[in-house]
Image 1: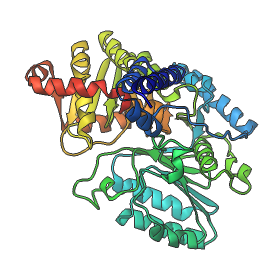
Image 2: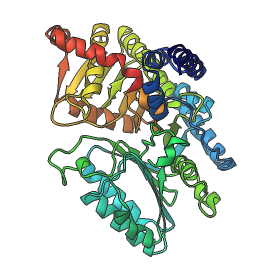
Image 3: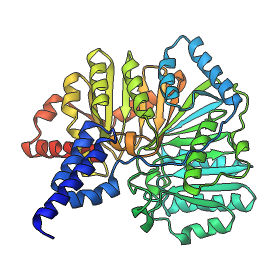
Image 4: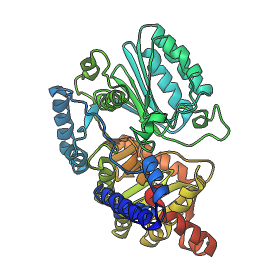
Length: 469
């Protein structure tokens, strides 16, 4: 084959690939980054795009309805918001318009800021379960806490309780057949979300991960937040334990967590659990708490969590306090933070001094100068890695979820977040944030001015890769 023919074929390939990328309707920065990769590294670009590309994941649709009682409970929750004389309804309506569940009542909400108390509450709820236990985790390690949880699930399965465990193929890759065999032998079901196998070359994208953390017991008690199943999450088990935040929810709102689990289970197994309709039974919506569970992922035509965060930030009038381990935002989130600070809102951002990715740390620091200049107060958490993903908006909205403030969480991974429309819970989350600030240091203009040219170049270079991180 002559060189002109090779060149011609390469040109045709680049043009076709460019057309496909342009039709994906991704952000301009991400589109431009992929176009440059294909232009200068066409062969490498093909491999990377197959591995990490943003092609929409074709997820099978789960055709079902929870029932009229869910809608009735939701209407009661919306009425409660309006009667309270607040404007949280503006935030609640954004994910609803994107076909996510409405707010639901909760009988009780518990906030945990450490792994010891979180695991204790979770083990208690699982022990008390009488019908089913559903768990979904990005990371489930075969360590001490992972073994304890597995053994408890074995006990429940042997007692006739339906146990279903859904694991991400990348985050939980250390779990082998030997570790899971006793669980399966006891009658529990184990499934993998987007497992890493040879067939991924023809079917599923390796880059689409399920980053959700869900525990549902008898459709009545549920857990979600930032904590995975790993010794690193608990001071009892690790000297280098992470600082994280998790929620326990009791009541009707748990059905929204159940909905996400069943959708993910169906995607992974292509089958519904027996008598699936019974898993969505709702008790009377008598709880005085109001919680909205929303999910997002690459199968969604819109960005529910991103849009909800944007709305919560821009509607705030007094304060917006955010904690995130990975801060690689898009222009919309940066603009929302800066304009909120400029109009007098107390905007504070807490990030770890050192994360688990040097590249992401550098990219995150590249956004700090513009934020500080606009009046955003940025802090670095010093004692250890902070893995919490939370937002305090004014005195009446508390957000705890699995999504980071980065491109990956908003567009590539399957995530969920819990929006709690409650002054009591918001006050507790605000207290936790202020406690974290006592172990943090501020990044001010003087600190930024003292950064070396080499560091600034590294941050700027990492920022160019933000759409791909």
